[in-house]
Length: 154
Image (tube, rainbow, N blue to C red; front, side):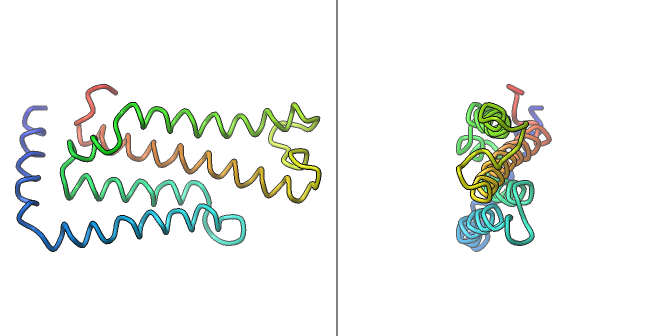
């Protein structure tokens, strides 16, 4: 493990001299995140959805960690924050299902969420896909850090 950390530090020192790569990544990362949000919220009407958006969103964090160093990337999104997002996405998904049951429907019956069944279905799908996206993004980032062998707490 010490060899991997030394390799990460050496890689970060090497990347400090690659200004074009660092500047381009700083320009690309916000665009990648914006595209992930587009895929997330456009999933009802076209290709996309929570899983795809989560993977795209995670790719922005992974790109940042690859360019600026894994240990620097871990400071941006700590293990505690990743655990929070993993749990929050799962709880949002389950909470929408339970809310449907409490409002008189079946589990994940979105029609009962609002007075208008069509609007309730749109709201339910939006919340479910948001829960999936948050969970997938946090999972992909966690898997990256585990493979990078930098995350001792997991």
